Length: 348
Ligand SMILES: CC(=O)SCCNC(=O)CCNC(=O)[C@H](O)C(C)(C)COP(=O)(O)OP(=O)(O)OC[C@H]1O[C@@H](n2cnc3c(N)ncnc32)[C@H](O)[C@@H]1OP(=O)(O)O
Ligand SMILES: N[C@@H](CCO)C(=O)O
Image 1 (cartoon, rainbow, N blue to C red):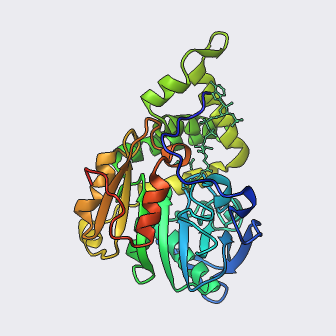
Image 2 (image 1 turned 60 degrees about the vertical axis):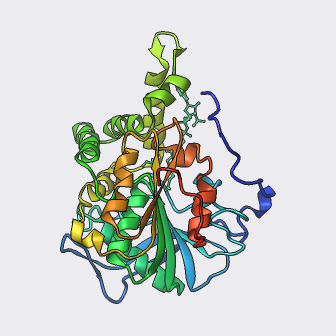
């Protein structure tokens, strides 16, 4: 695959060993809800919830909370190096940065793999449940106020935080996510879950990832990166999708996939709840996103009283926030710092 173009180098790269400065990049765990259970939106109680998380920087009462995407994890230093490090929006020399694997995930926090055989079965969880777990983690860490930043599922989760814990959130950055899951996005997830149900044990998850990958790229991106063949007689994009399916199967759990996509699909806040959110929000659309089209992301400025919009221009689709971030780190940094002028897109 050809290297992705970076139209703008975000910031001068600091020396490798200063990118994360607490010197401890190991995952930590906490067991929460020991004395009183978490009451899930589905009505079931959940006790002794184990949560895996990373922190970067010195502990402070004010933190930046990073909310990861569907198949992400708490190791921000592994998947968002453009955003984490000295001089970047998540700067451990200045900020206390926290990221936890979500409830229902499979990267250290309790999820369907732990609930199997316990009588809890395949619990239905919601994004608001995830926010409640996050609140308990912040209490555990002594954090009283957060700036939240999330992309994709993490962006939907940021909206859930604004609805569930508005008292804790000072400002929020939502990248490549709408205020509620659209029929189009629910449809894609429904097809993915149908594949898992039709072929449990691995093959279905691979097909689910192939479907999802098409929504994370764009026609122009695939034309640029996947034209022709890598193996004789096989379209490059076909082997690319097959490989991406294999890669996900090696690191993800099909039950978590079902649980988390269900939580995304059921996130359907009403207009009145959204209109009551007073916290400043930066909503970032991605020009070529076919999963959550930029216009849908921009609709946050109509739904919320204090939202601002900026658009990342990239041909690489939804995953551009990971692969082709361009100026996004600087824009996010300015917004998180509360700078009045953070350089709005002309359409913003
Ligand atoms: C805010 C958040 O929470 S984000 C959470 C972060 N998410 C994650 O960390 C998990 C999700 N990760 C991802 O989605 C991906 O890793 C991304 C988006 C970051 C990048 O995707 P990648 O798979 O690394 O890149 P890309 O799509 O360019 O594919 C490259 C791989 O496909 C292979 N490939 C490329 N073309 C082909 C082809 N035609 N046939 C077969 N293989 C191919 C490459 O050799 C490369 O293989 P490698 O991964 O073994 O090096
Ligand atoms: N590609 C990222 C974002 C998808 O929402 C992931 O797999 O988590």
